[in-house]
Image (cartoon, rainbow, N blue to C red; front, side, top):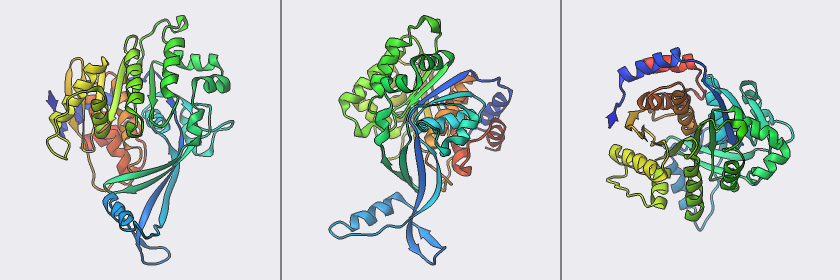
Length: 377
């Protein structure tokens, strides 16, 4: 096991590798898409322009619970309206780091929605559905995501083929050497879509059986049944027969996946334990037969591969400017690092630094910005 918390040496070495690295291979990411409205909940208002926000999710929850049997009024103040969804945020972050990105998903149909115009300037968009809507209530200790998700049902193999054309879908897959497929929980037809891709694409002669790197992020599977989750995990595992498979989960998701798989969990306290996280990563990886499993709690990230495990502490801040999308930026950073040939520790360092830069600046870093941030750690 390699544990490198706040290692100056690792950060500097990683910065130099990032600067010296060559162009990344073609990237395909899909399939969700949301319009995120970032909100603050008002605690007390001093004037028409001044207010104090409810700072913690715990306090917000207690206010709601206190209203049971009565009623309450909560004022929210929009902070930003931005592109959302695990896929578009990850795609935007990887494009900022220099990847040649194609994004296929819910970015507007038949026309691209204005909120995705900036992404369209950085990446090729293959739009097949309208975005869903998300209200993200942000607090210092977490966030509450409230969604309106009617259009997620439009993401299916049949609908993509109908609106995009089977040849265009197949070509996007064939051209990519990295494919990120995220937000399984929100997309009800995702497992079936993966299974159709296995039947139609992975053994395609046109693809010349080129081994790809495939990244999967389930995105909080708590609301899906155990049977659905196991079907998805078995499908992900089958991809590993032909491709390098990476699964990324946060701490809560890792525990949920472990329980579904029957993987032993040893929880010693409410705070994430480093050994527990690495054990989870290793046991999930071995159970699924995949190349890498990532587990990223709030303050550090661990990973297990066939060659061993690694853990890196991140540049955590107690007062983030934005938190929605932090995990997607970690995923983007790790995957970008992996694609440029970084070691497991270096890729984790790029992941936590990408997330750390983003939550401080509400901005996806470019490669030079990220290298400078790494040098400052």
